[in-house]
Length: 529
Image (cartoon, rainbow, N blue to C red; front, side, top):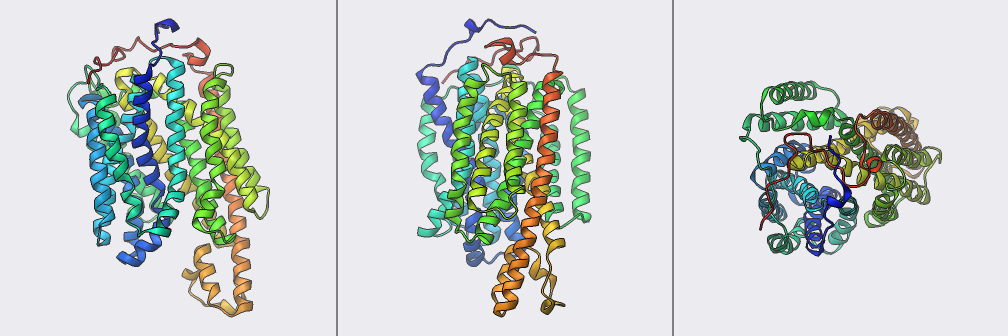
């Protein structure tokens, strides 16, 4: 490995920082769109009258397409040009958003959401990989990645706030139309500020590997989601088996090809895989927390959608600020300490909830602030490690792997932690004797149970509501305990991966080191307008 002298890395100028500002627009597009839909679902249900399965697909098809295509789009960006793919994706995302906003049937909305997922998959890897090539100086790159992570987290948190405000003033289509003015601003800025970059020697386009990567991620995410909601049935098993078969075939193909779409050497680097694992599990913790916090605040504590989103806003702001603090902190404290520590802080947020008994608004706010500190550190440093431990020419592929970890972490958070919550709630719910023989479907969730209780006579309704809230509190405690175990295990594994790494981290070896011994690790094709 060659260690480059820090003085050889060029500090970013005004053009690079303006280019970063432009790149934040598509980051906001994708992150806001991942959460803005949640509060629009009741209005969509009334207007389009979708079936239960169609409503699930309206929500899930976006993440399924996004997760399935990230790796393929990252590889395409390395080959065809990252700016080109970014522009195509932005325009396509805007058109798909207009289609979604004007959909008159559930089928049209599902197709529009699928198209949003397709074009969204072109945006995120392109933004992160272009940061890798815009900022060659270590300190500048870390600051740029902190900005990227802060805007991604901030956009996801702003989604419910923006959605709640829009739905109070406009129809549900407005949650999609907010994308259009951002894209109108972004396209000319991208043409003016962003220079094209690509892998100078990418090899031929491997369509079979792209198909196999789709066959891995799409069915895998579907199997996780279906297993958590419908249980382990034949369809769940079939899609899981398909994902495993495609994964084996994909891995084998990458091993035998001279120029693979995914360089498996990246995954043999313990710094790279450790960062991917920490990245995924920190998002798993965040998604799991948001899953039960939204229900707790609205259904149990009686807050409205906008007020519930505002309770979580301080944690989001802290996460964004701490990401920038981590850029300075890593100069003094090694990442092998900071990243496991960030996971411990995430676990502490769950511990606050688990030990509180019946969490109140203040408890949820404080817990999410603690998690925000951990997630802000983890997301900034793990994304920096992922990019720093990949050749510049493969920045698109490395970014796609990072984004896939995001999506899988979010799915696992809802599936695993949500499943524990649901199972505990079902086992702990004690129905009043007067309700013996009533269809159990009325009591599967806290929302359904409270809605049924509202239609009963006062005494029985109050008994059922109290029993439901007590069972849900037990579910939150068990879900939090599960999350603590997962995050603590992640902290231990990350510590071991970083400690036993044969290579040194940038924080340990000084600024500006780059891995240059890899034959694919030469500089990108010279950037040009």
